[in-house]
Length: 156
Image (cartoon, rainbow, N blue to C red):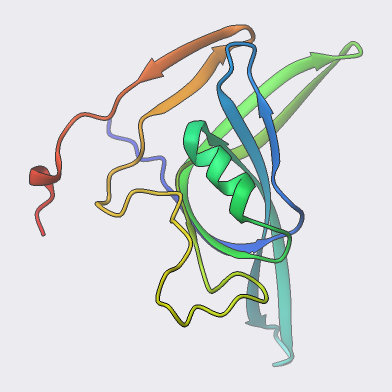
């Protein structure tokens, strides 16, 4: 049976990125994203729902996000859902988060004019390929995986 685990989100950061490093020195950043939805209820009144999502970004992309992103900034995130559970103080804790393959900064930096046409770098790949990933498979372990293919594989 085939399966698909793909998430596309556009929202605003609710706080500054939190950058930390694994014991082997790999950067990892947590972003907290607010994604708003608007709808009308049965009486026709406009309602708003906000979904708060934790985004996990790895490697160089994590450092770039930490350097350029701040609370309130709009971003586009492409990634996959990831469920984790762990033991803490005798209780099992769990969370559902998004493992980012690509983070693209939207709009300009707050308070910065871009008259020169030079913008901030995107933390993602523009060719549609995700960056090579590195994430722990279990506490204390790390694995590396590389995305195969080249720009010549892109059909457009």
